[in-house]
Image (cartoon, rainbow, N blue to C red; front, side, top):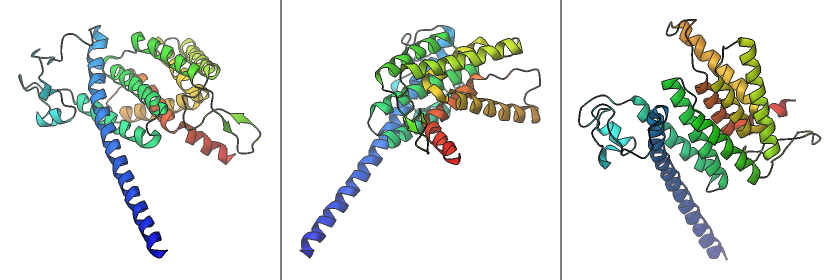
Length: 290
């Protein structure tokens, strides 16, 4: 009997080791997949603000217009191998190419580790890619593009139709609220309420500030509400805190002057991604304090 038990324990240990190794391999695979997706996001950032096609012409250097070979397009590794310069004209490449690929790769690896192979993984990854693209375009061009925001709204509403509402029970067990670990399970009603709250709040800010905020931010707030539902308020609060801290630092270091505008879209995007990843846990923690 002892021999049989030892054999069973040995087999279980081997199975556990194999499962752990496979999990590590899949995390690495999704990290690489994220880097590949990020290459397309960089194409979107380069071309969408200029109303260029995402498919034609083929990838080329923005300076010398030389068509890039496959070896020039390997995410992260090509940039590092070429030391951040075009192979053909030696003009420096934007560092943004590298950081978007690295951050998106790490994000995809984390999402697989957290959600596994699931519909949740696909939905959260889509939202993160959308807001990364919005963030970088607003940083570089000062634009929040309708061609991204409106389709994003349509897809988010469609997702809310097919995914059932989720619930979080207040610690006392009395008050039912929204939000589980998977935020996109909002339901169409909750998504619509979130979108209405985001739109209404930012419209009010535009009216009160008399142009202190752009209309792109208003539409983006509506998109964020559709994506996050009732968590629109903490998401927007987080964006304001992020924006205030960064603006204060830039003014303190005299990188920006008081009258210079700072795009708010990047802070909205960062806050939304943080809410998608940790919003449910943050809300659970807050409710646990009450």
